[in-house]
Each structure stands twice: as structure tokens, then as C-alpha cells.
Length: 134
Image 1 (tube, rainbow, N blue to C red):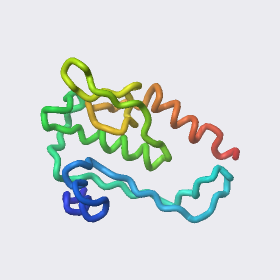
Image 2: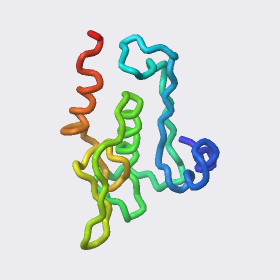
Image 3: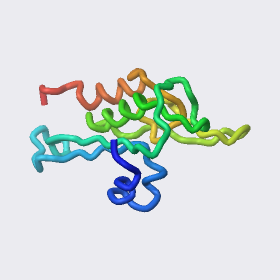
Image 4: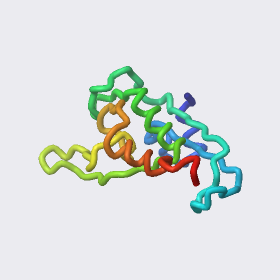
């Protein structure tokens, strides 16, 4: 957990107020399984302390509260080679941000999500289902 200034330095202007967390993955520089991606040596996860973190899994965006576990789970997904997925759109009625499908690995925070299921689980199985039999 680091101050917002770290995110500004590491990611650029505006990241200190717009980035909840980030995962940096470091590679060995090898590709043992031949999938076109570098083999992961380790990942580091950083969470921005500039936000109001709470244990509130059912709170929705707009109340100024962010569920800590949701964001950490999302970043752990990145550490396990998950990418963002889903399509973002604005609700025509209230202009709220929504994703389809709604998932832990969506590219934005709308509501706390603590379950790895559905498309999140399918993505994980797609990445790791054959390991270590490559």
C-alpha cells in the first residue's frame, strides 16, 4: 500500500487520483511453453492509499468507498496472467458505468466483487488449464 505520489511517478500524471491498484509482472526473458509470452519470475501488487478503503463488498461506486478485497483480488488476477475483459457502457437512464459481462476482471470498479466465478473462472482455466502439461 503506497501513497498516490507513487502512482503519479510510476504511471504518469493523473494516476494518483485515478488508479486504485496496479500489478507489475517481471519476466525471466524465457518462453518455455512457447505461448509467445515471457515466463513470469514474480509480480508485485501496489494499492493506492489515496482512496477510502473499506470492508464493504456490497457498496456501489459513487459513494466514495472502495472494497479493499475486491481490488486486491482483481490485482491478484493480473498476477496470475488474467487480462481485463468485458465491454464498458453507460446506462442511458442514469449515466452509470456498467460492464458486460460483469466480472472481477473488468477494467473498472463499479461494485465490490469477491467471487471468482463465471467469466473470471473461465479466463483463469483458459490460462492455466493445461499447466504443467505444456
